[in-house]
Image (cartoon, rainbow, N blue to C red):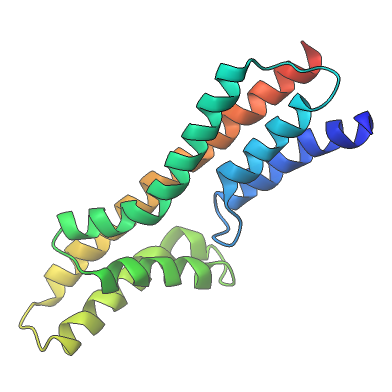
Length: 163
């Protein structure tokens, strides 16, 4: 049983790191499960405080991942359409070569153009571009936070395994 827990402790954070870029996998919570797996082994390397803090950080970062593109798009003058376009662009980007680098922006831009057409707004292309930039900045920022969180959890696990 210990071997299974050790394997889970290493594999789950790796899946969590992949989840930072794959929207269908909640990266930080999956990585945190790896930390819990190691905690339930004979090693018990983490204090209660570390577990609670990392659980809270994982939760906050995961929630921020969903909110950041919307807030950032709004700050740059965008709409929910731009934020959701960013998310849809991310999903489409999984199937396009190098798509994760540019498809969130393209999706946000298209979402803003659609929003302008639905609202029959006189907003020009530059406003849609600005809002798309905002949604993209929020997406990149949230992805960076998820990645940092998963890497920290993975480092904790590695120190727990060999410490």
